[in-house]
Length: 230
Image (tube, rainbow, N blue to C red):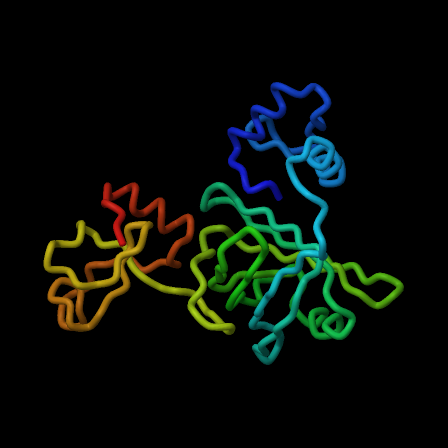
């Protein structure tokens, strides 16, 4: 909501006695009541009153026939895990017209994947399967409050275009050589091109494939001490 890092929030908590106390979580990862935090941020000019209700754009592949659902979530609330062992959670209100289609998604099982998710303040990303519906609440007006969750390890960068899809690339078992012509990502992974003499189609497997831009991607790069570069 504020586009600031953890350090800024820590400073607010230390300097302002009126900052809302945690409503849950742990000492390391506290969770706060959203309404209370918004009220404090507004009172201290850290955010402005939004001129429109933010919305998330979501493309989901799932259901019994692996259909593609394209819809928006109003008032989205996204919580991203800090490590690959955690779980990401997204909730929001769907439009009335989408409620019945979204209700067809499997509840409590890993039965869907996210081709593209765009949320205000977060770069577009995708989820390589294992997305499940963990909560559904239908209001009397017909709207649906939907909550999705997925393991953070399968979150990655979304491909270009409105449909998206996961950008798949690999982390080399050894750092790319000077002759490597593959596209390199900030995470240390590379997108292989067939004519690369080091990673092309004619050479043996030298990469560990993973969701590009995800947490597992960063973990693999750090474990191998690779230099990140574009």
